[in-house]
Length: 299
Image (cartoon, rainbow, N blue to C red; front, top):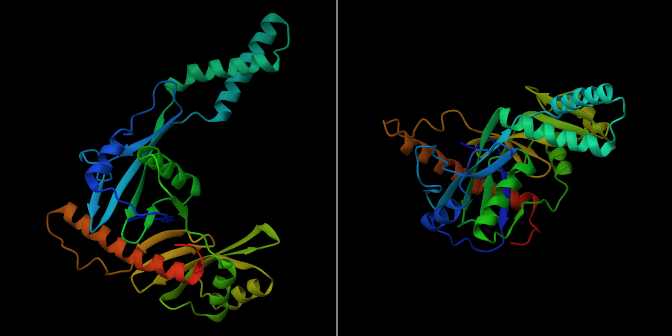
């Protein structure tokens, strides 16, 4: 189950099957950071390190993943070491250290410190739905999603996609839903929202566990704040927070929806069933979002 969804629209048919796609991704397989590398990004199996294939096919969708590893070397640590090195030189040689020499010293310190720095890894999952023309990345930031797409584009030589963008003011429409106490067809308001003052981007109000028809919410709307994030239930099946860029966060199946899935010993079969259910729900949800917020977007 993805926790977030950054959504992209394929501009042309995606004709890669599971095995040909795996072979192209294999040339960009993940490898750990070298001694002097600050970060690496490469494809890894979405099913874990024991699996060989880099692409997993379920109900016509292609599940893949990229692993990013980075060395944890905060700039403040390097700056502190640089300040100490500069002080040592200035005291020992009775002279000032210039800008060019400082830059050279910083580069030398990085070369010394990087091999000893700890590393941190994260797996970024995505799936391609060729039949519906979507690529969905489990990421909360545009940069993380774009990093994966850039790697995929490099592997395939071409990947004509563009983010799903609204053609109507999403914040205005979400605000109207909250003001009216009801959402558009297929959606039900939950108990959380984010309001922002358009004239002051620092003025943000976050509400959770609150009846959105409460007077205090109405006061914020009357003062000019707009809803830029809204908790919704889709089709009684999927809970989510929709933001003003049509990004999806905090995705979660409704209680009881997974109860009918096979509880046998085959864990992979259950995961496949859960992924197939998620992809089916997102397929319908994305079509509805496009209809509601991006109807004028070219196919």
